[in-house]
Image (cartoon, rainbow, N blue to C red; front, side, top):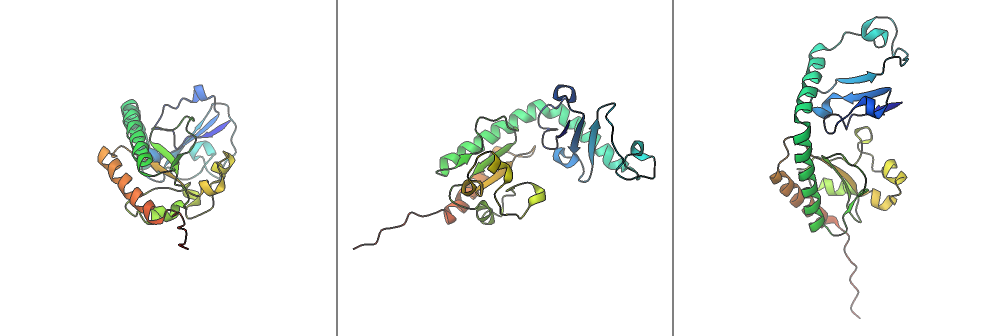
Amino acid sequence: MYTDAAQAVGKIPVNVKKLAVDLLSIAGHKLYAPIGIGALYVRRGTALAPVIRGAGQEYGLRPGTENVPYIVGLGVACELAGAKLAVESGRQQELRDQLWGLLYENIAGLKLVWTNAARLPNTLNLCFPGVRVNAVLAGAPEVAASTGSACHAGDEKASAVLLAMGIPPAIALGAVRLSLGRSTTRSDIVAVTAILHRAYERIKPRPSQSRRS
């Protein structure tokens, strides 16, 4: 069994034995390693076919000179993430919950995606009511946020994942993922709330006013 742990590693405990996986991939930039380095855990005895044939690097699975500085960078990033995991996870979760609370207080009808599900401590996925979230973000250039995965950047279609979860298309089009990091502070949370609230107020649906007879 394979699992993509790019978002999880460095944010929550990840144990391949407890997960009972045969393959597990890591994206280095998700835990502050250099962009362009990753790792694949392969359980002993799991058979893999070479990506490219013709050389002996990476046990003959992926020929080419290894990027040693980036590999070292990934190792150091993992060590730092492991040392900070418990404290940083709790800190970011507290800030995430504060962000949701402030946004919910200021934006009527705001919805949290899958309230009862287990979530990463640093991630907040919510839906702005009655609008396409790209329009909200266009009015909030100070905020770097994601409406979906990087491989679908610029795509204004509703997320297939959210639709599969049973979220109506009109609501899913208002979905955005807000992610916190090690440098995020309480003042950042307050600032982002004000910026997003202001951007939403500019474009939110207005109740139609009846004409005077």
